[in-house]
Figure 1 (cartoon, each protein chain N blue to C red):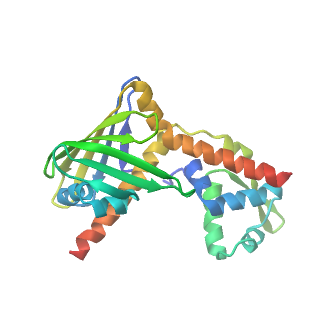
Figure 2: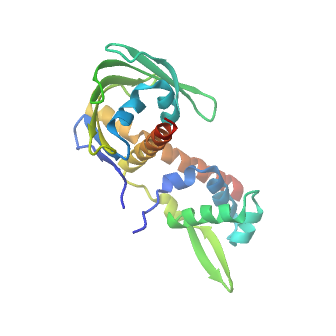
Figure 3: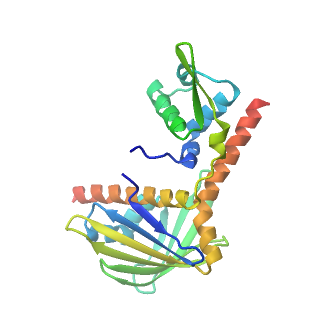
Length: 154
Length: 107
């Protein structure tokens, strides 16, 4: 059994496509994206502002283990109930640009659904920088660990 | 088929990092490793298993005992850079699914 999440990131393009099938009805999948308390639960973030309406804006805030706060915000461009959400997303005070996110929600059966998340970045370079973020976090962990080990060996 | 574990995920866990720091100095048996922690032997065994699957730890049989030691080669492995990104989303979506399932059953 493989992972349920697929990432398509073609070389040299400024977009990615994330797809995932869920064992929940499409109405619930959609709900997970429009109810602040549900977003807080699964995204693990604080929802500071959430105006789910055409041209409404939202803002999330997370606190890292060191106690630093990180903000994220964007605008809801448009939506079609239980079918589509188009919004922007930006990490505050970081140099990763703004991304356009198009979420398509599809029913598969009465109990299962599929999400297609198309993310368009400002340039192929910025797309790759964004893609590498979790990877870089991993590299940092590896470096910190090597440091701890070296300190212990002294 | 057993899924290949992700090195990054393995070393992100503080307990597993502590285990690695510990055995970097000396190869140790699982019993001795577990004695250094307040967790149950079972919990520590699970962590050791994950680290072994990632090939960060190497087993060595000495007499009746199995000793674990650091495998520096395992640490050098750099996975495809998209993999950690996919893992991040996989975990987020798993969370979404479980949050919504319990939301559904509460209704």
